[in-house]
Length: 505
Picture 1 (cartoon, rainbow, N blue to C red):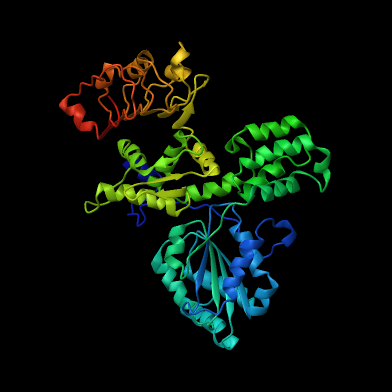
Picture 2: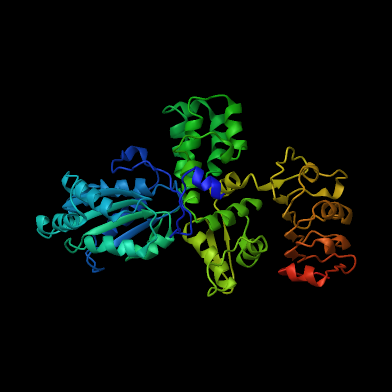
């Protein structure tokens, strides 16, 4: 390594950001939108406009965050508000700036001045820029109101936010700033009012949008069979307009029923998409995650769509696989677990949260589940007894078939050896002792073994030979033929971080 460092002229440095984020270039957004192309957002538009027009004392310039996952239409909604006639009459100056990942205060000052005056200040120093910006927002307007849209914001550094916000406080009372973001963390840092959480479109609006993109106007009336298939396609989009538009455009001018069934029966991540399709847009959210959270998110691909996660269990899965990173000795492991979950929640990777006090449950949006499958497919895989060509690099499996009446080993047992995780997810579909014995004899490197609610007779004695096991779940097995016999040496027991025996005989 030392020789290669010199050979390639590499230098050593200490990274100031442990997240190792490598943002990719984003397409800059603009403020124009044709109202006829927007469906189902009229009520959201009116809600935000009504707030903007209120004369409320919320500080000098209130910041209004619009929050939601990628593809929901946050930018489109902001455009609709920006171009509304009532907004035009209320605000003397309107500015639109696409922020994206590069939250450089100097660049943003230039962009704001350019949007306000048409002058891009390329040669001004930072001090000259701040003076020009404050003059633009204050004195030259004679104390009139302005509206500023900061679109696609990712920055979670509060110091940078405060630096920019102080420069924007020169406008008259009634000036407003709208921020669109995918992160609740950003909203909590910058927002002076509760965030406006954007929800998915109703199914009827999604179907209308889909038909608009899939057919020439009025042509759908000739293909009732395709419209019926299209209804099923729209349901897999989960109310996300960009997903609806992407799949509709893939089928444009195609009238063969097989083409439509191919889209309906395929996972979205398997479909070829352009750079502005739904998965590339969502993947940007994944790319922007800290590296330690990327692994945790990818691991969630082992569970089926609409799975209800329990915070108590998921963090132990991560811990058993060594995915929890403790940056300093002052932070407790319990604090790290909670912080990981909160970070993913704040970035809208989880939804439908139900708080039960000492734990909470949540789900993943179907499209984010597709994304997790896409990014994890080399290491995590959901399989059944018909699965073939399993990559030897796969380390984490979940099995969804019931092998009770199946005498043959699934192909995965022949192709994979170094398995770390094995979930058997068919609740109350009992697995035989012989099947489990075959698994345990072949997979010697289990870190995590979950056998909840699926044991019919007895747990094989060979589980005691799993020296690397850190998590064993035997919960909710009411039908054990006899008490399971588990023999662990002192060293083996030291590795077993967690063992659930709830309701096991």
